[in-house]
Image (cartoon, rainbow, N blue to C red; front, side, top):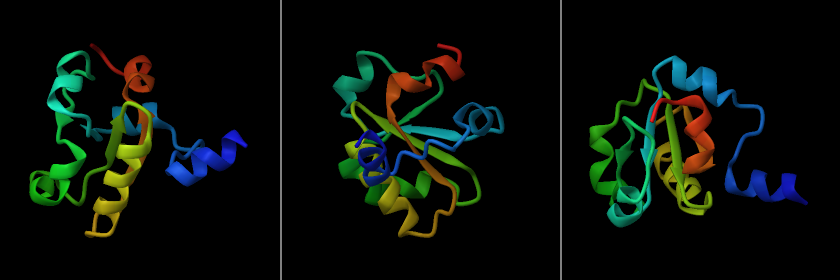
Length: 105
């Protein structure tokens, strides 16, 4: 059941997020600015999911991107938007704090 939910949300269990981050991935936190201010990954970009269409020009299509949010739903929406606009390496990490173990905060 959990695997089906993760697949639906685009959370790839086989993606080595630590390695992807070490290789220079951009972490995009798609929560609201208030949520982001309450805690976030150091060096991440805060682009609320509703602003992804207008702000994706800030991102490079040739760089790996990891999206995150509070639960994985908004980050999957952002992932889908990016993939449908020519980004090829986009990962949904789900909850932003899942990435804490892979980064310096």
